[in-house]
Length: 223
Figure (cartoon, one colour):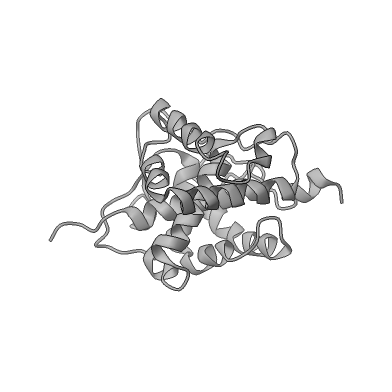
């Protein structure tokens, strides 16, 4: 198998499924404002080792300055402020973390997803993650800001164990592929009616990590 083929071995292509009732409490509401998707997930070198390098870099950034990572991910990804902050955080650690991956085209979604996944491990922990992701009626409402975020939020909440299991795998591994295959039916079911998505493995993992981090960071309703 060629490297590009290995990179996109699990391709969720042209997903188009019927949405469930809008009354479904687990399916997030959709922000009616103009859509801004996460930036396309592309790389100049579609290599599993390059993806692992970005993953490790995000984890290093969190280890060095966790508050900076939290501040960046708390911003709305549709804004210029978010995009500038993500790049600034990445560029600010090239002297403290292994930045060999910087030779590749910078991809904010993969980098942000790597930071989100690292924060899930440090702020929540693997044993507690499924419980923290599961549907909680006391949690404040989370409004999806794009169809892809809605798909990822819905999947993380409806399949908390499988989502947490994905983060326990190494990027680019056979275990990761199997974990994504397990999640694929839920991803398809959660995709907004009429929406389409062509996502490779790193994109799926990053979107789910960002969604999971948003879920666990959402406070409970006031009593």
